[in-house]
Image (cartoon, rainbow, N blue to C red; front, side, top):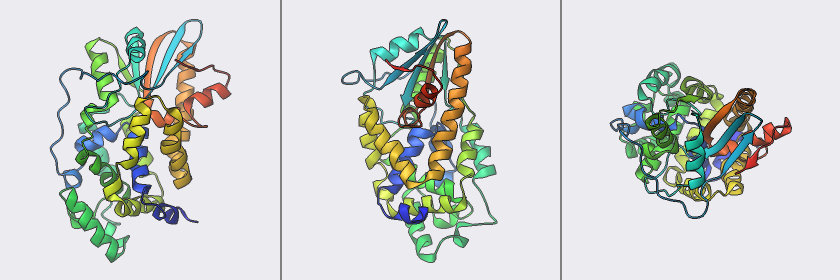
Amino acid sequence: MTFASRLKSTTAAAGRAALGAALGLGLTVALLGAAPAVAFAQEPAAAPAAPRAVLPAQGQGPALWTITDADSTLYLFGTVHVLRPDTAWGSPRVDTAFDASDRVILEISNPDDQAAIQPLIQQFGISPARPLSSLLTADEIARLDVAAGAIGATAAQLDPLRPWLVALSLSLAPMLKAGYDPQSGVELILKARAEAAGKPVTGLETIDKQVSILAGLSEETQLAFLRAALDSYDDATTELDALVTAWAGGDVDTINRLGVVEMRETSEEIYEALLVRRNTDWADQIQTLLAGSGTVFIAVGAAHLAGDDSVQDILEDRGVEVLRH
């Protein structure tokens, strides 16, 4: 069975695509805030002036791991890049670990940098030589026009955009309609807290690299992603709601089932590009941090910390002990 047919076989496919972005790519925040006006038809959101308060979670809250050696303590925390403002995820354990850390490392240091992503969209998200109208059927273009209308655009306006960008736009836009707010994402809150406390904030990778991951997917995969988004535009937040509930409660098994296993079953190409290769690179960087000294708080998308190819499993396979806090 081809990837395209697998994607078309379920109305939850676009929900999984949005889920992967919400859990796997820190650029989601910048894209939601600064994607082309043609795709989102909204003014870029202003960054919050001060750290936002977070409602306390029920129970222990999201999962937290610790990696230590003689002179280093590394905290590993899974995040969701876009949340509703009233999502309750506050945790004394997380606050204590964050406050004890000398510095903070996110997936990217500038998750809210709309100025940085705009030229990347121009470079990697536009392809006038291969417009969507030459890649989709007439029926698909008609359906794209309907879906585009819901985000304030038309199929003609989206025509020059590459399939990955349109697919992601159609998958993420319903999040905004459902009350998900880029400014309520975990990274922006942690970044604001760090800056208020004078803690340096750096990234494991750059926003350029994250855009290139999506742009580097094969055209077949990009088109299948877009067709799935058209098939299930109205249901794109259903699984994300379930996953956010699991994340806020520290239920890593459910995160794995909804955010990792289903991604792999949908597309090995996306799974390898979005998770495995990046997790391996981050494990390398964590081992370099361990070779130094100090206390560091590392926050990455929760999908990277669940499943057989998680950052923790890669480290443990290399003999590095990772303990659930």
